[in-house]
Each structure stands twice: as structure tokens, then as C-alpha cells.
Image (cartoon, rainbow, N blue to C red; front, top):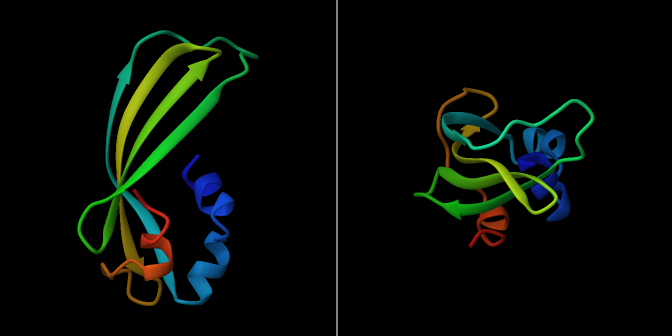
Length: 99
């Protein structure tokens, strides 16, 4: 869902890795499982990004089967420099799409 959010905003993770040379990594996840999904269920996964500092994003994610909430999660993602794998600032172009 996070990759699809980026794609919908016009970003490719592969292109971001090349220029401006950034990667995203999951730093933490908190998941509340509310109902089980079943084999072959058609699920919808949503994500709402929120900036958290200059080098990370927090995504509120939900997994739904129709209108039924199956799980919700809080996912913190850090922006890393591809060359060094060290934290780096989020590009302004990405930040402009958040919140």
C-alpha cells in the first residue's frame, strides 16, 4: 500500500533510489488484528501518510474486507541515503504530498 501510495503520487521507488538516491525502510510497526481474513478474500489496504520530522513518515494503514475492518496499523518509515544507508531528509517533492 505504501508503494502504491508513492506510485499514485507520481514516484517510483526504483527511480527515487537512483535520483535523489533515497530508500525507505520500515522502522516500527504496531498492528491491531481485529478479524481474520480468509483465503481468497478481496481486501482493500489503505494508507494515510503523516510527516514525522524531516527524515521519516508515519502511515496509518487499514485492511478492510468490504466495509469490515480486519486490521489497522501504525507504520513508521525512515528515509535513508541509498549510498550509505544513513538517515537523510525526505525530498521536498515527497513531503509536499503528505498531510
